[in-house]
Image 1 (tube, rainbow, N blue to C red):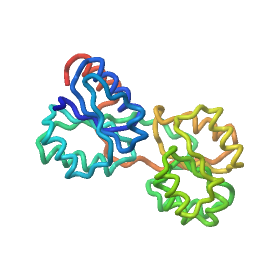
Image 2: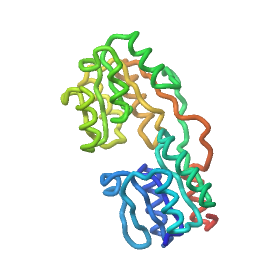
Image 3: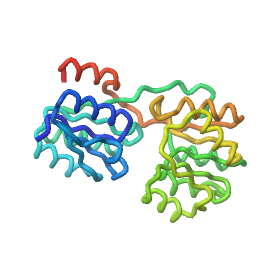
Length: 250
């Protein structure tokens, strides 16, 4: 049985997993992939559940463990996960708390609320595009004119994501599989290697390396286009959640 169920293979999730172990709180950490599992230490009071869960499976875990709290530290763009998790908590009368990632000012960039709008704009441009949107965006990016030669993808080093990109028609030479976040210097080296003119990315916060990506793109004279976060996020920041856990307030 778990006192707390923590969802998220994010940097926030990993930090909270360490804190829960240090405080000897019985916790179940849920991650989507084996790669995410490899980044979380399952020991002591902390167990790890690996595999994607729909709303029904989430509710099943809550019924099984009857936790006092569910912490949602999933990625800020994983709105489907958060929506399913909130619904599962509501149906099982479980307390839900979102661990929100603080936003970073988007000065000097173009912001698009939808992928469709972003792609429509890309099709008014020429030049090489460097995508930090991840493997899940690969299929949508095939709508970019001459995507096979124009678009470079940087994705997590997962076979599933790589296969999806190749099946979508991207050449292997335009796919970079690496785990971030990346320094400004490494970002700039990749942008220059691709001869990229445009960076498309998510506003992933400081934890996701957003600031360094913007700085590298500016250094390389690139235009940056940001896909806006899903709206309406509420909750507590990592620092606020950490403080409450350390003070036994959660």
